[in-house]
Length: 248
Image (cartoon, rainbow, N blue to C red):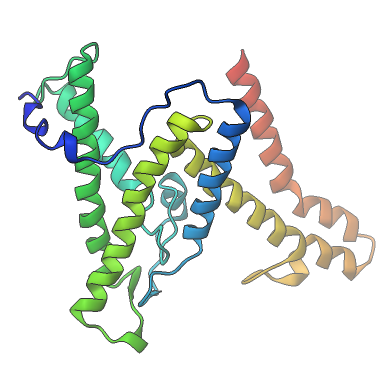
C-alpha cells in the first residue's frame, strides 16, 4: 500500500521549518536549553483538575519514554516511539510501500508518522486517565466527563508538543529531541538518587545516608559511608566504560 493517501493532509500539518542558513553553535545551545527548560517545567506540572493516583508505572519504562506519571508528561514520547515502530514494522513487512531513497516517499512517511503519533497521543492519554490507575480527576473537581476530557486533552497536547519540540531540537538545536528528553529524565533521576543517597529525602532512612552514617560516628562510620557511595562509583565506571567503548 502506498502512502499517497496522506498527501491531502500534508499541507495542513504544522511543522518546524528547516533553517535557511547555517545555525551558529551559540544559537543551537540556546534552542536546546530552551527546550530542556520547557521539558522540566512540564515534568513537574500536574494536569489541571487531575492528581496522581495510587498506581505507579515502571520506573524503567518512564525513563525510556521520558515520562512521569501524574504530570503533563504522563505518556511522554511514547506515541512518537510507537508510531515509529509501527511504521517500521509495516514497511519491513511490505504492508506499506516505502523507498528511503525517494524524497517524496520520505516526506509522506514522515507525515504519516506524525499523524499516527498525534492519534496515539490522544488514545494513550485516554487509556491512562479513564481507568484512573495512574492519573485521574482530583476529588475536589468531581468525576465528570468534562474533567476527564480536560485531563486527557492536557496530557495529549503535551505529548503532541513534544513532537514539535523534537523537530525544533533536530533542526535548530544539538542532536535529537528524543535523545535529549531521555537524557534529561535519566540525568534528573541520577541527580535525585545521588542526593537522596548522600543527604536523604522522601522515603529514605536518614541513618542509611552517607551523612547519617558519618554523623553516627564510631570506627565503622567511614567504611560504611564508602559502601553507601558504591552505587555512584559504579555509575561513573559504567559511564566511562560506555564512552570508551563508543570511541574504539
